[in-house]
Length: 126
Image (cartoon, rainbow, N blue to C red; front, side):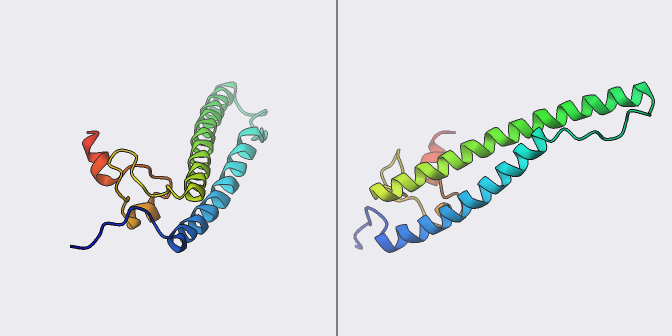
């Protein structure tokens, strides 16, 4: 019977680190764009249109800003989770399920690099 691996090799951890760093870079760019669109209060030229349309426009703008703020919050959490994954890589605990103690499948980590639960543990939560 093959011995079960207890952790990912340093080479594998380096691969995951590179993947996570590229995801952090993209996520930070996305966050910057979200924050800019949130702060960027451009006048859409509704000053000379009917008051009713202007009220609808302002309501829509408020909803859009709230949505962008919500998305920015999620993006910040995602970046924080990715940075926490980098810490686990440095500690050589990356990819170990915090419930079962087994290695999280490599394909799962490629799809969700900040995962801390294996599919098995995730299914036990339901």
